[in-house]
Image 1 (tube, rainbow, N blue to C red):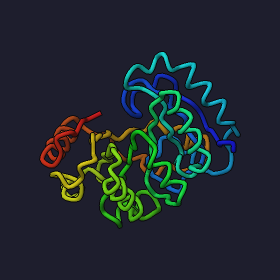
Image 2: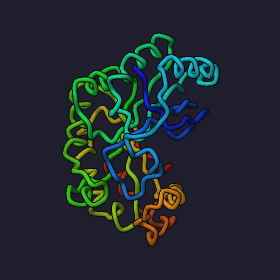
Image 3: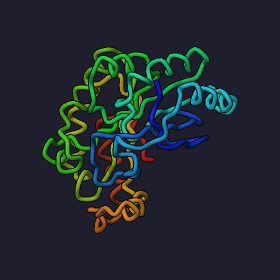
Image 4: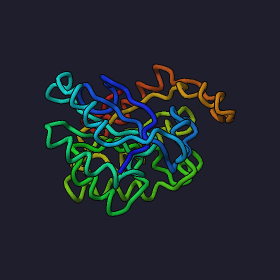
Length: 244
């Protein structure tokens, strides 16, 4: 079964531990206002790719992965192609390659469950803990994302929690404290790392190319003071929070 691939990044350092081959898959159910890859949202498009081609690419780069690196499937939303991913992930692991799944946790079916059951690490992007603000930010509810986090915890599957600090949208003390109360202070033992991600506008030019309106064009970047304040709040709930 072929995968719809948008693009690749070799020697990535921001999508899981160590150096990684990042495979960006096509298609996502979310419409995040700050999406860095809006051209991956549509389920139409992408390059039909045989899993064997990705395996070959990963094997060629394996000498650079070291003990921690490997392959990360991102997007888009990789779980949208979970059925095709499962056998590829198993084959990568048979060759001693670590596999991460970078997901918003919004899709669930038997293939996704199997995918999360075998992945070495899940990078779970929680966009907003507040349901109404999450809906405004992504166009979808966060119910399934939180249920996915609970499933990972219940089934002993390690994951990183990732959170983007968008000024005025997801960086308020109320939002961070609510996130901490939900996930922190030992409630989720399977969280291995909490990544605090500053807001950026790297995808803005892509919106212009696509002819889309970038709705956050008046949203400023985080100041150092805002980032330091947020990090301090996260540290009250987590002992593994890092500011990227």
